[in-house]
Length: 95
Image 1: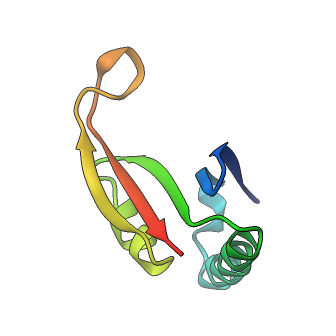
Image 2: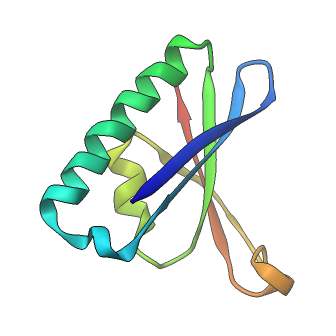
């Protein structure tokens, strides 16, 4: 099971999120997740977004996933985690 969405921050710019269950570790489930998420990003672009951005905990393997969806690392957000714990990375995709 997974869910994703985009919150429009202002015209053309959205903050994107993705959550999936650890039980989706099987290849066929992940393949379907990637297919649906890529279709979703095409819809985001058709809706007029010119930038999508998202945050993920640093050094937890999300960089490869972000790159697979066409996102690039933009910055490191020091002490961004809950209670100021943990560094996160800001990813962005320009359409």
